[in-house]
Image 1 (tube, rainbow, N blue to C red):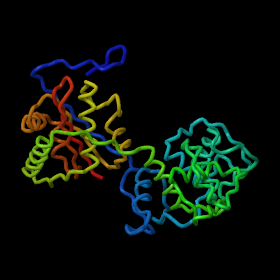
Image 2: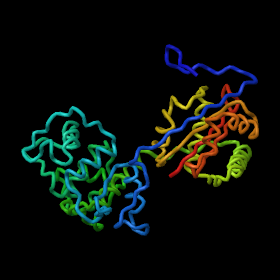
Image 3: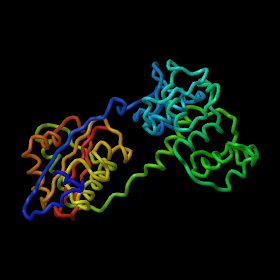
Image 4: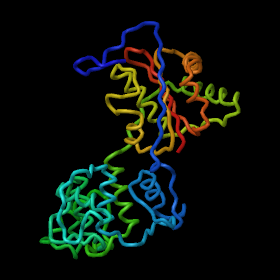
Length: 345
């Protein structure tokens, strides 16, 4: 498919035409599974730390630990926020702090956030100083542009009405990113730990990027496609693929998007590339692929088309993948759209 001069997708017009496309993509090394010696599976924030580490938002040490109970420094908080928001750091003006130079760890991130107005210009930045709960409230609210107020902050007797941090603490608590340290205290000058910072960022990202609801698909066709896929894999002694709920959701969304917007391409006008789409839906992976098709009215027809194509067959039989999501949706000019998403978490 090509775009016309006014950048709108051409409408598909056909009666007995079927088409297929495949796409293979891999994640950067930062998306590989990450584990830390001091963050076991039973740890209360294992999920948040692991997911942020896999996205490259937080980093561990050379000895394989994360240091969850250590205080997060002001420089570290800047680095986490910039990575979480994917903020460009190139060509930012020097913030001219006396204690920060180009060799300072986190310099680029600090410069970017000062340039954006998240951090204020001052004589010193104190990059190695632990960040307090009040300071973190302010920079998170400003960096992520959080909104909202409530009466919850009034319960904290250590955050008086005239406190300059009060509006930021109010917004952070209103958004359920954190709570008080007791029902009547917030402890604004208590240091924030690395695990707490990770959890705060994870909660904000969850609120800003909720999983899109899955549309209704053709369940019988989808189930048969899964059966046929694993039969083909069994023929070449490749382990069966397991259905991944998030991937299934993504495949349904992609097929419905093609039907609703009358296009046939791996590049969605709504979600971008498959890479972009999985990132938006919060699905982390090390390798992934996509097969799409339209016009085939049953599972056997679409599978025959995919298996007769080198690229599609490679995706279906690849040992790189362990999970699959299948979405078949009727509608649009194509009549029916099929999406297979493959991945290795």
